[in-house]
Amino acid sequence: MATSDKYPRTLHSLATFLNNALHLKPFSDTIEGFHYNRELLKASTMNTYVETVGNRANSLSAAIHESALKDIADSYISVISVVTRHVGLSSKNAMLAFDYTDEDFYGELSSMWIHGWTGEHGVTGKFKFLSCNVVNDDLMVPIFSIPAQMGDGAAHDIRYIRGQIGKHNLVGNIDLSLFDRGFYSKEVMYELNNPHMPYLILVPKNEAVKKDLAAMRTGEMMGVEKLFCFYENSNRKEFTSYLDFIKGVFDRKTDSYLDWCFATNLRDIELGNRIQTYKKRWRIETGFRVQDEARIKTKSVDIRVRYLLFAYEQLLQAHWVLFYKDDGVSFKRYLIELTDVCSRLVEKSERRRSA
Image (cartoon, one colour):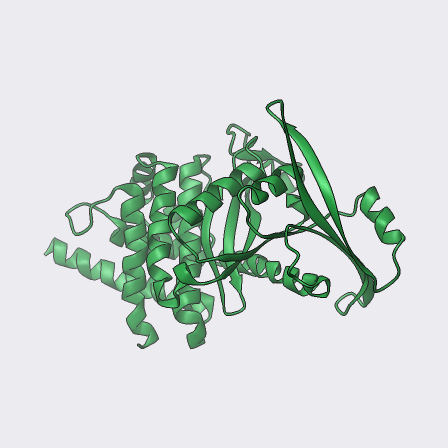
């Protein structure tokens, strides 16, 4: 199928997401996802505000205020389940990467969804989203994300996402889940152990880790089983995990020897393969950079507005990865051409309606 022939299908998929998330009625006399696509795509292509590029910002905002976070999440999952069918994602063994990404906020901190910041460059807070991406060698696609509320913690957010992945059968078996050092905590590891979900977490080099690494020889590898315990609601919880130490690995980018430490509940990955396996996590950061090219700006403090726009951006990225990237179409070209096709279709519909 020619690339240009795919655009109407992508627009239909995006409109379906908006209709289901916002309880809009397709093929009616009212404004629905088909029409809002034009404003959202223009704002996405130009990295600006919806109100800058069209006259439907107020009605879109009103529709979002009639919706709920769960509606947006359920609609995203429904669409991503459909568009990943042709790659068989629901039955595919998957390597997952989890990471937080954020959006700057410059106003007064008036919501539990805004995480405090330093004030540097006028940024007073951050809206945070925990994203889960498939990072297989042959596929890198966002499958689900949620907004992060202050006080919930990473373990809480991971629990919700893995629950939705299982409930909706988004992937087949999870071979491994990858996390950076910010996720290293007893609560997160306990969550991933109960029930078992294979993980590999980069461990920060605290004093205890530095001491163990200092006692090792360059090139030496060591795996240590360790008992962890913590208290939650006055209940003692304990579990075992492995700490894998790798001393003095040459890194070509920095032209230096680096030390590594990982936490994991797996023993079937060779210690020597830990670093190469972990580096696949960086693919999610590549995904965030791609998504930034489609950023839709907003000043709203309503988390529903923020979440809908974030989910829309991720669906744009997912469609590009699944249907256009392998055709040699750049992400920006895809956005521009998709916006152009959408504008022509909406304008044709409006002319017909006026006539």
